[in-house]
Image (tube, rainbow, N blue to C red; front, side):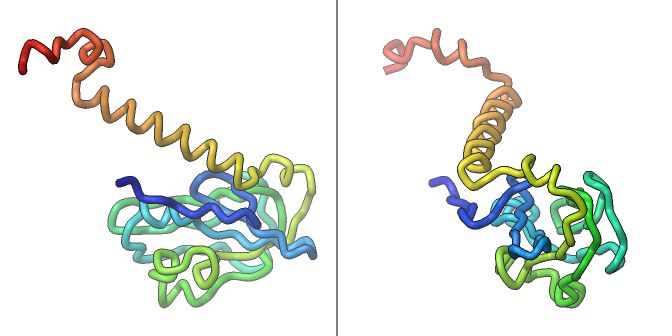
Length: 160
């Protein structure tokens, strides 16, 4: 059975890995999705930018290290780092345990509204997630050395 991942409707998404929450005051909280924490597995450290610095869209702002991989979050929009979740320095496992609440990473004061329109809503990110899953399963299929045609031409009746 496939694992079901949460993509809450009240959030916006930069990708299937990064969520963004609008607090309504021009401050946006950023974190990783349930899917991202699953892929990363046991998260062991998080590196943050300094509070108060201005970042441009696509700047590398957070690095998450796990036993499986290193993941870099790029700024989903330009703005000023307003707050950092200091608890993650001592307890990075909060990202695995509860990525949508206690595991938030940082807050950014929006610099320009222009980039917000590029974020996805929950329906769009779900569509993107399903596309990625299809691509992954096709790649797994190809890595095994099989072509789809191999199965279409195979005579199953002959072996039984």
